[in-house]
Image 1 (spheres, rainbow, N blue to C red):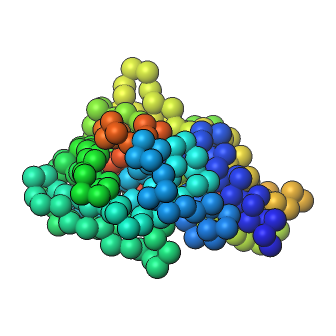
Image 2: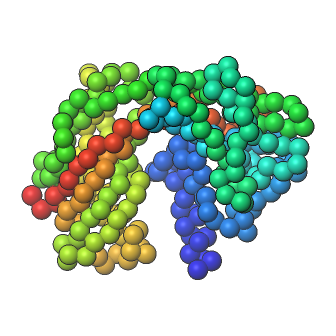
Image 3: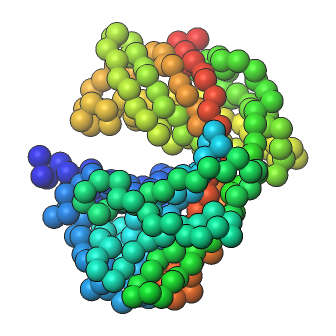
Length: 281
């Protein structure tokens, strides 16, 4: 079991560092939930300020802004810093006074807070505080965006080769696409998978239009099938799936210059799109 945990962690680390997966700062903590023996946890006050890497992600939904934070050491995602005496995390919405982040669990790995804010582009500051000195990290939420076409549940057939999605805005940068999938294989077995990474192509002439290869989708879903079955390669191919396509845009903020610049503060927005996939037609 421990060996498998190391393999999983190594896979996650490769994904987080850009090895074909989600960028390291799009997710709050790719190794959240792993034991500190694997994560090489350290007390934060044993590390110099310029080696503290913030990993802050800001999201907004239903009139609330959510702050998700953890700390690592320099560029090393396999070292999690645990805020310890003299160090803390606070956050503020706009010019409001900062509030302390609360521990998401009892292990001091992950810290969160929420603000009631329905404005289109809140400006959020997350502070690393050491012995009373405040190191602010600032980001502004990207503008809201929406899908104009297709309307309703998207019907995807492998044989079509490509499907297109049109957005209301053409001011779209750093767009990523993942899907949550509930699938049936051709032998009638089933599996579920979350955050399956896809590679949408932005149209060169119309930046509000994105193209997705159905062959690439089929490959991604079959890879997810193998991963969901403890890397068993001798599985029947995917036959059909219910999908939620998660379109995400990301804006990078400014990390305090005194902190390690491998860290990040990012704001993301996500639009979900229901879809069904048929590999046989």
